[in-house]
Amino acid sequence: MAQASTTGRSGPEAMPMPEKIPVTLTINGVERRIEIAPWTSLLDLLRDRLDLTGTKKGCDHGQCGACTVLLDGRRINSCLTLAVMHDGAAITTIEGLERDGALHPLQQAFIDHDAFQCGYCTPGQICSAAGLIAEGKARTADEIRELMSGNICRCAAYPNIVAAIQQAMDAMGGKP
Amino acid sequence: MINFAYARAGDATDAIRLMAAAPGAKFIAGGTNLIDLMKVNVERPARLIDISRLPLKSVEETAGGGLRIGALVPNSDLAYHPLIQKRYPLVGSAILAGASQQLRNMATTGGNLLQRTRCAYFYDTATPCNKRQPGSGCAAREGLNRGHAILGTSEHCIAVHPSDMCVALAALAAEVHVLGPKGERRIAFADFHRLAGSTPERDSNLDPGEIITAVELPAKGFAANYSYLKIRDRLSYAFALISVAAALEVENGTIKDARLALGGVAHKPWRRPEVEAALKGERADEAVFARAADLLLHDARGFGHNDFKIDLARRAILRTLGQAARGEPQSQSDKKIR
Image (cartoon, rainbow over all chains, first blue to last red; front, side, top):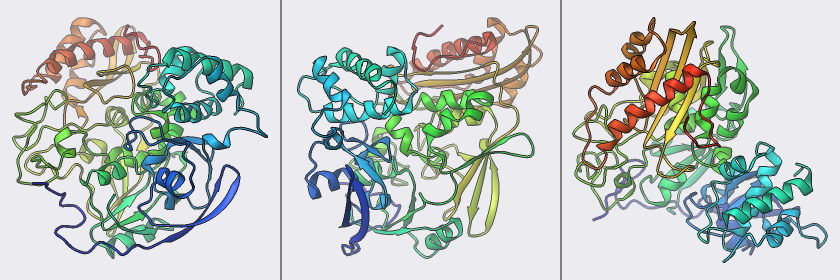
């Protein structure tokens, strides 16, 4: 039989009634006012409420990186954070990287280098790489591999992913 | 995930007040561990008190020459902070050895201290676990315990503390600043985390209703001779089987001061001042390091699957002290161990 934690609550006491909380988020440059339940992860908000299904749910536990998005310019796992905590924040997903119909240099580089097979991890890989380039801490291939280790690719396209990131890094001159 | 109520705290006093009014609530900041545990039903708070906007995000030099790190400074910002890189590179190296950059961007300094064990039985609510359900037993002792503790274990729990950063903070003798209903207090790092003993449900000596406001590093940072070596099942983004934080002060080949702490081996970062004292005044050579390793691991015992960790720890200690003595710290991106 399942044994629940002693922390928090015990027994079949009533769960709190759904309480929606208003938040304002700027998502891919568009300001959205949304009312959400506090237990909504940022990932579920993006996919289920806003139909931004480019961001993928892989493990839902922060272990695979498929849900990586940029929060105020920094890469995070959207599965491990509550949307309600980010009132006022700016979020960029894979859908928000292109500019005026032109692919982001990382998107183009992933195509050029065939940096995927099934493609499921790719939105997370690209958002993570965008964060990595903005951080400016990775220069060598070793450093790219280490700082991209939060993004798992079960097809093992890793050599091509590293090459794609190197190409985009050069193309972007280290700028986000 | 379970349903819960949510409140946002404006400042630290507000956070303490909200918690006092709502027993069964949990504080949330980075959330990377708490939300994970809520998804698997191990943590079931009725209410979350969001402290992520509290003004605890600065890194400041103290009058005594140390460094005061706000509890909400993200792990990534701390690792790359110029004062950490220059004066406390052991801390920066240990942080970068842990988790992924996405997680380090979310996880906070205070939350890193309070993260819970990754023991698979703690996570699996279908199995007994004294840490999750006191009195239910420990499935790890007779179970798959490859990653479990070899030092300071109890019959009730053989879980390890998962942090890398805390191993460095233990070695440097940091201090934890705490605020609670009874006011402020400071806890020496060695006294912050607990051994499992008969109360494995308690990871630390933080009292209910208290929050960490800062971590303070003393003036001495051992920036010239240090190394953090982490041994794990894959080259990155995995918890430690063994990790070693070593810091030395060496003059003409003689050890003037030494710090040595282990991660992945116990319910808290493992440090023994008598081992460090035994290194002082000795030559910085392999024979001396071997004696220190034997002393530190004297009481180590395995539980079957993790027996190999005792030898692994001994070899890792030798390597790390050697790296520290040579002034060639382990790189966290080039994984060759030299």
